[in-house]
Image 1 (cartoon, helix red, strand yellow):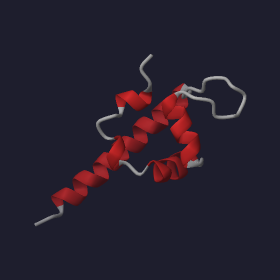
Image 2 (cartoon, rainbow, N blue to C red):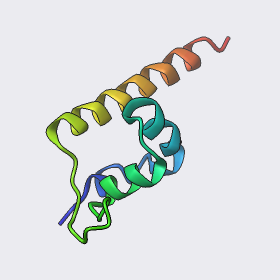
Image 3 (cartoon, rainbow, N blue to C red):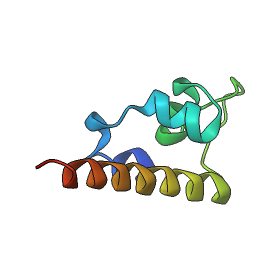
Length: 77
């Protein structure tokens, strides 16, 4: 089964996941890592997946970051 982590493999090394988790979700980096991997978050042994709302929030955070990177690149003379 492919996870969101797999879907993001091309950009994962370049993203500060701790900042994404804290700023957009209000959680720790570990929480986001478990969500991305589909692994247990609460210590109950059950797989953990993003809710529809969390997926939308992750999408928004990446689009926001993309916009910030584009504006920074365009500001270089």
